[in-house]
Figure 1 (tube, rainbow, N blue to C red):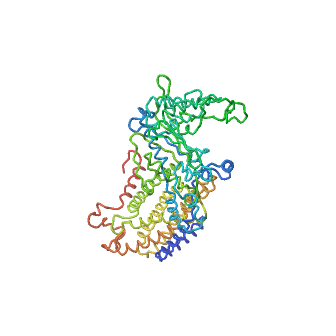
Figure 2 (cartoon, one colour):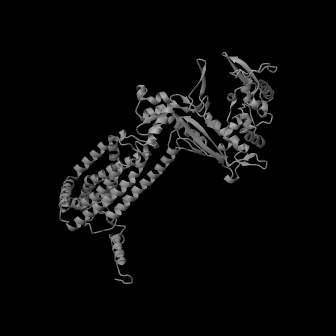
Figure 3 (tube, helix red, strand yellow):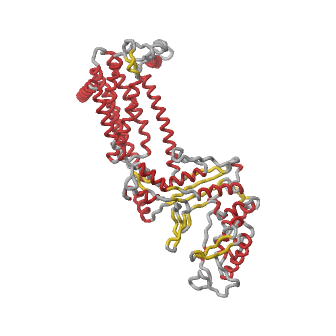
Amino acid sequence: MGVIENALEGVFEKIGRVVGSRPITTLILSFLFAVACCGGIPLMKSETRPEKQWVPAGSLALEHNEYVSATWPSNANFNLFTATCADVPEEDCNILAPKYIQRFHEINQKIMNLTIDGDYLVETIDKAHKRSTSDPDERRPWAKEYSGDWTFMGKAEDVNGSIEFRGRKCFSFGPFCGKQSILDVFRDDDNVIKNLDEEKIKRAINFWENQEGMCPLSIATAASPCFEDNCQKYNTPMERWLCRKTATEYCTAECPTRTFTYRGEEVTVPIDMDTCGDRGCIQMGSLQMSATPPNQTMLNTDPDATGEAPESAFEFEPSKLKTMVGAIGVDSAGLYAKGRYLSGYYALNKNELYCPSQGLTDPLADEWERYALCYMGVDADPRATPKLDCPEDDLIKFTGLFGRSFGDEFGAAIRGDIAKLSSSYFVIIIYCAIMVGKRDAVHSGVTISIVAVMIVGFVIGSTMGLMGYLGVPNSNLNSNLYFLILGLGVDDAFVLTSEFVRHTTQNPELPISERIALTAKSGGISVLITSATDALAFLVGATTVLPALGWFCTYAGVAIVLCYVFQLTIFLPALALNARRAEANRRDCCCCCTAKPRGIEDVQGCCDLCCTPRMCGDGLLRRGLKFSAEKATTVPGQIG
């Protein structure tokens, strides 16, 4: 063991002598090496998919997931939300009161009318990826996918005799957009919702789940034919005719319509939209009925000519009310009458593209969700442009779990950590200056403390670049790397600085290069042992079956090795230059100004003027620790 130790000490002594005698050259070469490593940062690939990060590679679950995704692909992205009262305490909230449903309807209309400018998004992505409109489509796949105006429902257009929706962002269940809320109970009808009262609301929500067929008319109005057995059963031609007769009489009173032919198609419109009390009558107006009861037994929808409508022709399964109203309560008659929360969802069609730096993303969906959340009073990303004004509503308080919500929360947490990290760097610099320096204008140690913290930045940048070259993915877990390297790097700086001060005190006559060589000889071994054990532990951990944890361990292991290398090639040369400055009696952090000659142990105070040696004396911590150790090892009850 002694032979190996002596050999290592000899190697480190030679390294110290080289960097101590040529500090500027060493620093330049180290800087160039770091820059070359950082060149791989643009090549980094980020992995954000949970199944790729936390499911063991080669596991059966991954195979099943790939099979299901390939066999039954789905692009649905369900954006969930809840709402409760904002103007009263939660325990006193009745979210089924008319004012809350009407306000929710207003907000929902804003969301339905929300238009996203896809061309602006394409232009933004072009700038981020340095592309232009002259580039081929394969270099700008987002131009084809996101150009144009986009809304939730899209715009219906007649294309060769069939209806197609342009700019439709919702996920469709057949011809219908995927969405659900309490507004479905009221057919999302402006006039019906505007005229709601407690009785109408109670009538609608209690009848909602009892429907046997989908009635296009309002179920909030007492006169609605939807409550008629003929319109619910709909089993025979006579029931069908009676239902339409009742509906026609109802619509004549509630919302008269007229039907005409436009471009070969029949179009039904209300005579006066402002006074239309039930817009379901527009749909009913397009259905023709004979003036007399039918004299035939077969319905048009009867493929088997049995005289009865098939059971599946009018099947309708309403959403469960408890999935739309939380903490729902009943009145004395056992009828639903109150609730504390509204819940629902908007389903978007994901159209993701892969970006090496961000993983799979759909910027169009992200932007739609950002605006929708803003209408709900939630500013999802305060840094995004254009800036949005998202005041909270005075009646309803929303909580959203959208597709972007986890990313927004994680980003906010990271930004909070960045602020804390910046503060920690500042505190570490002060702590280093106190611990490695003196209370003296020349030997304060501030500059060398800044260098110790700067090395952390070089290590992180170089590690990210090398991993980019090697193709090791980046994950959210790597945000912990900054704190890890900050602690290790500063600890190494303490050891090397302490050794240099010791050799300077013991051998002040030696040239700086020799003292740096001795520092590397004695301190290099100590730093090597701690760095080697830490790096080995992480590199062994890189063999774990959890991909994200393995990537983090790889990053950490390489970062620790680079941290050790930079301590030898950056910190030691900086220590040599700092020693030259101190021996020339130039002030720390202001080397253009000189001070009175003094040795490293000749403390003169922080600024030679406002702080006397007695006030700013050195060795307080050392003396305090010595005193504590003596007392701790003294026989109990004995002093001295």
